[in-house]
Image (cartoon, helix red, strand yellow):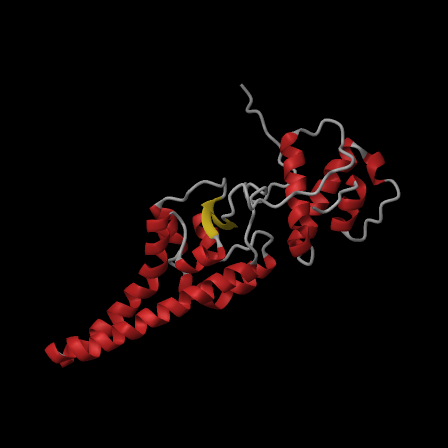
Length: 233
């Protein structure tokens, strides 16, 4: 029996695109808050190592310092995320949370993996998130995770209303397009946003080419709004 293929018009690495993905700005601010806390803990560890452990063995002070900083660097983020279901103090303050590509809670293995390359992400993480339509850093790509806004039903963003819908489109397609347009303001300067808009426009060309009559196609995101008469919420 042949397998039934389900087409996703906004599919990108099999990730659900109706998730409220956090932007690079929100993630950077959360990381800044976390590193302030991390720095305070590191200073306390240095003081403890020099004053207390140094009194016991001067030769071991350097070893304890290096080992403690290493464990703190890796354990702070991974430990908090495992203990709190994908949140660190910085993420809690910004109401962010780590989830899987399907929107579920990642296991300890995935949370450990996403933090293995955190030191490298200090260098390449922000550029990667800036050019990734899903704001993923290197660790997210390795672990298959995303960082989303943890707002609950009360804080859910209102998606734009689609005034015209191609025939045959179901709730899955509508939800994906509405979610994309709701986030397009922060994404439309990236090549990824244009790529996703082009994918939707290609689908419209197949299903309802009349919706694209008279539409200026130079800006794919603006063209998509015009074709579907979407009003931003």
